[in-house]
Length: 135
Image 1 (cartoon, rainbow, N blue to C red):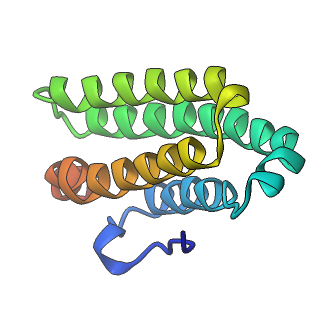
Image 2: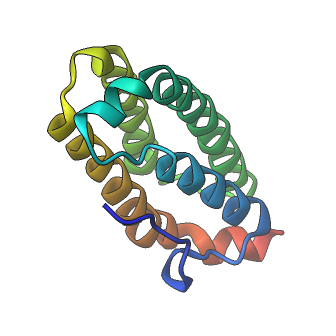
């Protein structure tokens, strides 16, 4: 799997959010491995990255949700539910991490990256204009 970059389609134009999105992407890119041996040798490193990812997700979602509140966005229930479900899923992945083989690990990483990209391009972008307008 190739490392992803924060392209124009993922930029919101809100500095703190774009910086946090880049930070999340950097953590996701850190979960890169090619072989079972690589996975076995780097389990502790990946476990630490997953812990950082969970903490970073919580910080980012809190920032995003606070900015939405400050912008007066009240119809964001589905957005908040996506945040909650994703946080639970990442926690579940972290819990099951030591029993994963390489294929499962790569599938989890691919899921995380696709969720991240889709969430920004579809869900976050619905609120970007209103948040930017309130800054």
